[in-house]
Image (tube, rainbow, N blue to C red):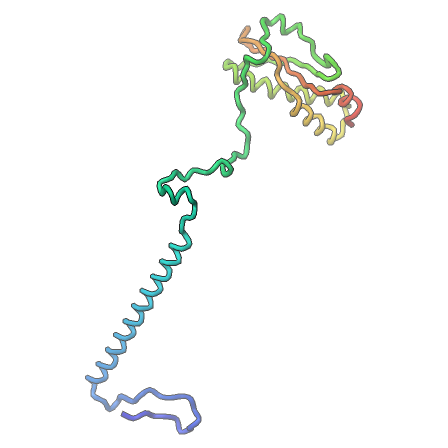
Length: 208
């Protein structure tokens, strides 16, 4: 076997050995040995890479929480500071025993509406809902809208958009149901008040 080079002695290109005159059996042995070596190197590379990746995954997923290290079966519930918060507030049923109960429909009819003092605006609403809590929530919604409409008109029928927002905030922050009835004549009866110091002056003179 002889090696063939370019005639230029400074050339860096080298031809592979010339096996054309060699025994075919030797050639098959050489190629077969080369494939075996390539396979061995490939297997070693894969094993080494898998071991390194495994160590990296274990290291990255190591548990450092003392509570879990002490008790691996600890319940992985979110802590108080990590509790999931809903994007809306769930409406809670009120304790109706803490507000005044209207005895009769006549009593409700005799209750005054409008400003009953310089700090309190009062109105009345009803609900046809059979369930008392459904009736309460419906009455709250209707009363808020009615209070916003009435106070806006009292402030100025042509109130500015900013003034309307101020009235709405005032009602949302200061309004509440202060009296309710049992189911009388297929209705619930309610009294709603907006209470705030100097409310009448704020509505009639301050909000523009």
